[in-house]
Length: 97
Image 1 (spheres, rainbow, N blue to C red):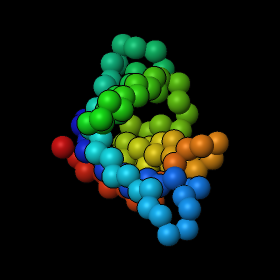
Image 2 (tube, rainbow, N blue to C red):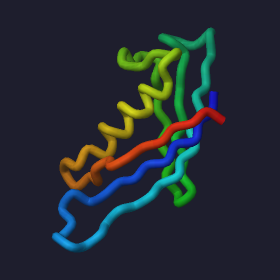
Image 3 (spheres, helix red, strand yellow):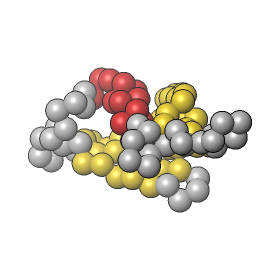
């Protein structure tokens, strides 16, 4: 199953009166193999500007195949959490292709 995801992120350390917002467009592809280990799922999250992350979800206990959008939201909130130099997620939109 494929998804389009857009995210609005911001540097949490931006000076007052300045703007550091970034709008990111991502393409998400879940792959599944019934004969693989665990739940058999993998996901590729790829952006237009060189962003590319590939995750092995086979033993991820937070992942539910029927709730892929929920997992993507969870991933985005944790990836852009505003901690240790990370940007913070301000908004997200996910749609099925």
